[in-house]
View 1 (cartoon, rainbow, N blue to C red):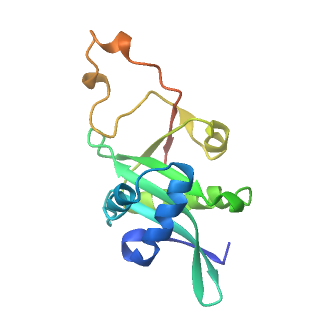
View 2: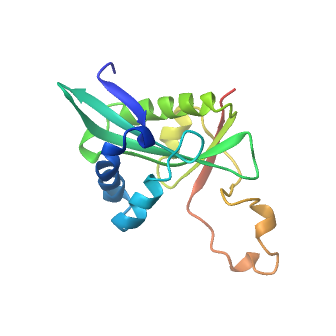
View 3: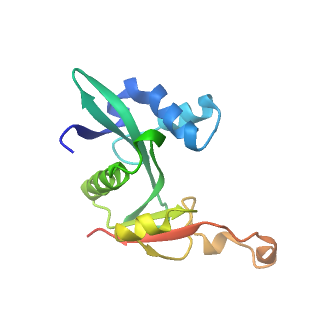
Length: 166
């Protein structure tokens, strides 16, 4: 993987539009809203990371990951999204960007990583993630559900997973 790098998007803003297109190819959203979200990337959190391949004198975007804080868990973070360009999948790039994303998280002094997935549970399990209770990146999940309205909440198809880094 010597030809590949994972770079902070906020220090490489020339990749904003391409990153937007890569993410929107998997999870369509307005370009304006997506760019606004990507432009929030910073050295702390939220942080967007971009996977690039060095080709001659240029860099080609092959993937993206986004890490967000969990306000109620100061030693933890949430990997909000991971995506690899469709025609580049199956080459170990997802594993590579996850490894580099976890390395970045460690530099922030965080010890636990959470994520949710609908169809990639086996992939994340192979990387050391285990199933866990749902977490909310907006605060305390359990206190935000009113016991009266809880039965009306549709069950999520998402599987929540976590990994201890330190």
